[in-house]
Image (cartoon, rainbow, N blue to C red; front, side):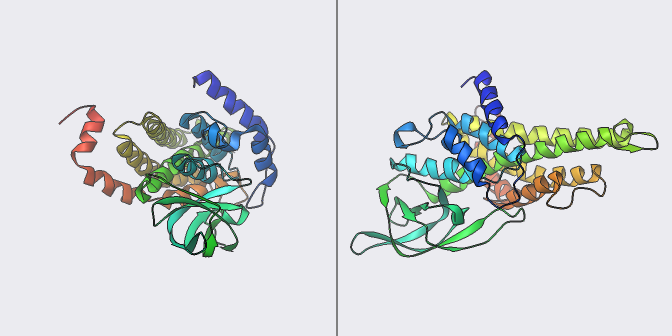
Amino acid sequence: MSDELHEEIRAAVGAILKGRDSEDDFDRSLWEDLCDTGFHLLGVPEEIGGSGGGLRDLAVVVDLLAFHGARVPVAESAFLAGWLLARAGLSIPDGLVVASIDQARVHRRNGLRLSGRVRAPWARHAGHVVTIAHDGNVAVAPVSAVERHENLAGEPRDVVVLDDVEVTAAAPADVEPDEVLHRGALVRAVQLAGAARAVLESARRHVAQREQFGRPLARFQAVQQHLAALAAEVTAMRVSADAAVLAVEASDRRADIAVAAAKATTSAGAHVVASVGHQLHGALGYSAEHALGAATTRLWSWREEFGNESHWHDRLAAADGSVWSAVTGGGR
């Protein structure tokens, strides 16, 4: 899709987001508006019930939702659950469906049934969960029993309790658990880049409006240096996330390296962005109600999810020559 059409997506989603400020853990009104326009399943094939389009299109929406701190699970429903269902050729069930991070035990007694405890963000608001069962099937099961947990940003990070639950659909798919980890790392990298941009924009506004000794903070050289460092970090995060999305969409053989580098870069950058962002705001922005606090608590949370920078640095180190090949575009 062209950059012009991506701008149209940003404008359309931006219009839906305009003026919203939900304090609930799930903005149901926003979710319904996204469903009405099809943006909640952008990037998911139409033949299984999605809205069509490519991974870059979906990444534009996810980035923008992260920038605005929207409390809706597009990442978990389209980026993860929709992807798993597409790999298995299964249709998307009615209502909100989210993906499980863990495998579930499978057994057969009067049909296919699942047992186990699987982590599934936003499950308390979902009707179905998609998981990879131990027999290799991608399975869809109704959500009934949920243990509620939250991350630092107050986003639902639930555990679904599957107690001999009958699946509603299942099909074999060539998907390894490690692929789910990479896919999750990719979407969190995109979200981290979006939230980091929100911190940068908030800092720019603050130092332009706030005065000290009779002049705006933005006029002080030290503030300008901090702002430049913040902008550089945000740019690195955005570029690495964009490169990973392009590599995955193109099925590049080095896509795993690009995803590992993106999650390592954005997770490491999250610490710098949050620290400098709060420093530029002075004593403001530490509460979750403040726009800055809403962004930085997400940065701190998403930094750890699907592997932090240490995990992905180790994965990159283990890749050895593959990283050099990816960087140079050829051999050693």
